Image 1 (tube, rainbow, N blue to C red):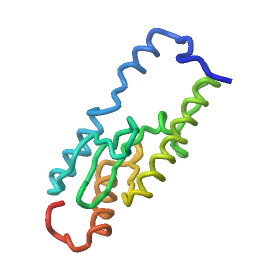
Image 2: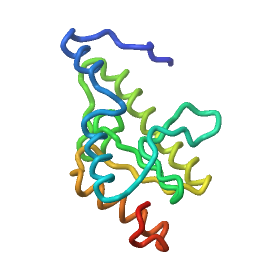
Image 3: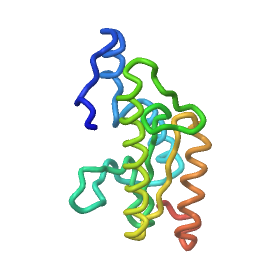
Length: 149
C-alpha cells in the first residue's frame, strides 16, 4: 500500500510548526558547529558522499573520513524520546520507519566506502556530542593528536 504524499493536516498550528522545522543550519546545528570550531576542529558542511544519492552529511571531516549526522528524536525515531503521533498515525509511522531505514542504509553505504559514521541525537548535550565527535576523530586519526583536524 502506498501512503499519500502528505496526510491531511490536523490543524493550521501543527502545519506551521512542522514547516518551520529546519533540516539544516538550525540553532542546534549551528551550536554544534560553533563548539567544534572553538575546539579547533575544521570541517565541511552538507556534503554528498554517496554516488547517485541526494543524501547529505551534516558535518564532514574529509581527511579523517568521519561523517556526522545530527538527528532529531522525532524525525529519526529515537529509541529513548521518539514519539508516534496519534493523528495520521499510520502515515507518520511509515514515514519515520522509512527515515530509520534510510539512516541505516546510509550508515552501511558510508562504512563500505571507509567512512566512520557518528550519529548525534537531539537530546544529547552539545558538550557530550562534541566530546563524542572529538573522541572518534582521535581514534580514527591518532597521529593527529593535538593538531587541528
